[in-house]
Image (tube, rainbow, N blue to C red; front, side, top):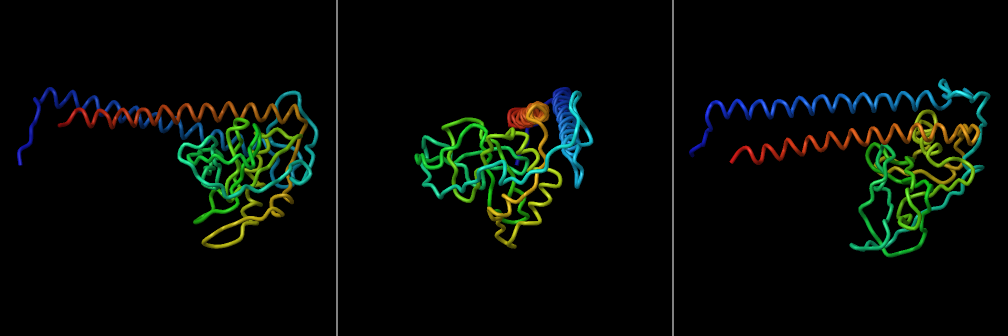
Length: 247
């Protein structure tokens, strides 16, 4: 077997190029990790913990205790249906596999069924999971009306009184998330019942403060997504160079 080698100078240039890209990827990963850590820290401080009635961190102009409410008092809950998949369907079919552990919505399945059409701001929640149950009870916010439908093994939560992004963030973190995990049943196939969700307790401030928290977390999430995209672009660039620099 024969191998082709370039000149020593070309080897050095290739080595420097790949090393620079690798260093940039490391720095970008560190930047992303710090942002994710920052977001986790804010999530812990922007919502009351345990029996507290106020969060550790407040925005200027807001004070007083938050109100304790059950989800059944502030949301309407319904169940998704098992819908037929169609390759080029008109609607995104949101199933238990469409919600990631970080609350991001990622839908690949489509359908032509208009049953259980979802509206902007609805929350979708997987009701079943396998393994560690990382996504069961996690919510994602529906970003548009008329484009998504509620598929198999999901709950839909609609609240006319609570900011949807605020509600999703509180359900997905802290003591509310811990309580959901306690209520999950099953071993290999994990599940959670409607009654387990509806009787969850959340803490609710004024609508104005809800919007303030929601806007702040949305901005932070957008920054995390932007830096994640930059990291993935750098990794793709490195792979492309590796494919083109060697024959």
